[in-house]
Image (tube, rainbow, N blue to C red; front, side, top):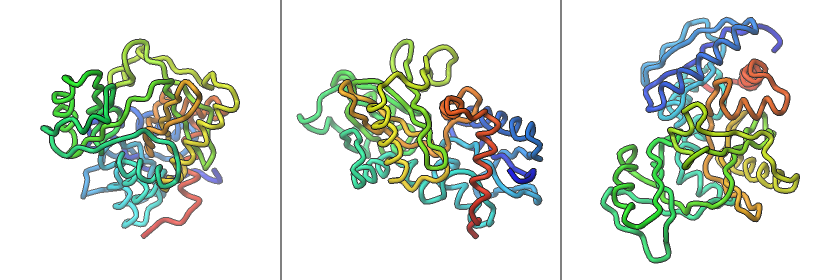
Length: 304
């Protein structure tokens, strides 16, 4: 960056992913201080956002509700303070899994077949659906409320559990294949990361428990399949009006066809998180990545 900045890192917040957000915020603040920036750390209260008066730019390290759903972005827009990542409208779209899938369909980005439920006692949709399927709260992140259904008799309890976290639940076909994620930085797809849980599925426990999941970056795909995965991820990022950076989760069928699952506009930012892993494979240190995110925020005029 051209000069040192006074940066406020927002971390913690009210969501179920508070602890992950606190870890992300601590890692980002440490990296930015090492570069010479003056950094404040703030645990925000929705609707009563208080920032140090000398703040030049806000680094968003919030995950889940308020951080990823456009809430804090809207407040910052009203205050006229620049911030990292996607704007309020794009964040709101990306956080809504159904809205994201609709945008992907409109943009001809491949995504899994789905149906939406709004009642915990809803029945199985039709004979056109057969397990295995995946249930996800429509507006949550970090695998919160994720349920796998391998047999019809599992469906009622899985639906009730998933609906504890939102008023609507998305059911989609469970894609057989390899699980990947693609980091996006400044409009460019970073090297693909393949996610391999050592046992079971990539759920909340396997995602946040050390040693439970293996990560390969760059993922061992040939050049053609790699390009197709990155193209699908970029297509989804653009479809939701993503800005600056994100992480896009993509399943890859055995024939190499990519299927976009969702777009995470505020991905984890610990030094072992997936976006930093991808950036490292592209030659970016963690500190350089954080600094670039701040630079992108400062290169555009703030709303207000």
